[in-house]
Image (cartoon, rainbow, N blue to C red):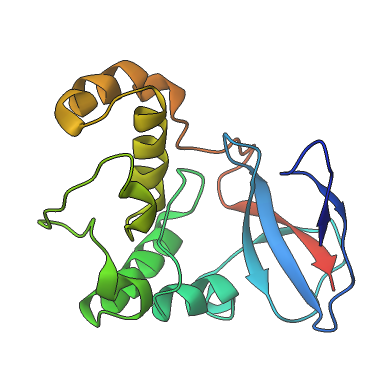
Amino acid sequence: MAFQADRPNKVASVERHPVRGHVLSNGLDGHGRIVAFVFFSDAPEPDGTEVFLDEARLGASYNVRSLAEGKAYSLFYLSLPISLTQRLAEIARAAGAAQAGLYAADASARGATFAVDPETLGDLVIGPKLFRRLAKYFGDAFSDLSGFEGWMRRMSSSFPTTSPCPRPGCVCAEAGG
C-alpha cells in the first residue's frame, strides 16, 4: 500500500492481495474510517447487495477471530443489532478473561491503576478510545491527569460514537482481493 505524499492518511495505490475477501459495511465512523465486518472469502451475493448480518455469518468474520485471539478491542455502534453486540461482547469478555493477546498487557482493564503522562502514553496498551482521548488531551498542552475529567466533560460532544445508518443492521457487500 502506498500513501499520498502530501496526505499520509490517504491511500494512493494498493497491490492486489492473493487472498480474496469481502467486507460488509453500513458506513463510516465520525473520523471517516469504514465500519465493517471482514471475511476471507468471496461474498455469496453480488456487490452492493443489501445484507442483514446474522450470528452465523458473523462467526465467520475476521472481526470475531481477532476479538477471540485478543488482537482487537470491541467497539459497538448503535446501528449494530443487539444480538450481534451481545455475541461480540461475549467473545471479547472471554478473550479478556483468558488474557488472550493484548488483554495480557491491557493497562485500561477495569479496576487497573496506571500512571500516564505525555511521555508514557505511547508505551501503554489501552483501549483505543481512551488512547485517542488521552492523546488529544495531552496534545492540548496538559501535562498530567488533574484536568482530564473536566476536559472530557467539555469535549464530549466532539467524540462521535455512532455511525450514520439509514436502517439499523443493514450492511452492503463489497468485494476485494
